Image (cartoon, rainbow, N blue to C red):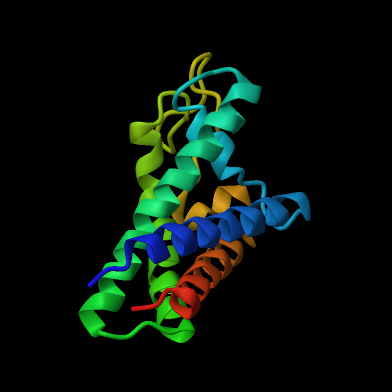
Length: 158
């Protein structure tokens, strides 16, 4: 059974923490990736609006993914910080290995590995494991997703 109010609260808060850690990683120079900006430029070429739109999309995506975590907890009849962290690490590896390589095919303003930048495709492609945004990017992604899962697992009550 899912406790909807509990999921809404902790899914939202866990997503905000994940987003904060990713933004801090960029601010500290650990990665060049700005996921809200990358997501926002799918909808607009305006750089300032893209950051806002992307932040909203990222929070909604995080909330949706937190529901997947909650469904996994419910199927196991247990939550817990370490279960959430393990799910987060798996989720992080999925993002690194799959989502990053699909982005150029989906994103209207992103160049691809096979076709370089054009006037309308100026964003750098993430590359495998998002390594085009810096060698520490995978560490940032894995840690932020593990923290997301650990918080959700620790505070979501079955």
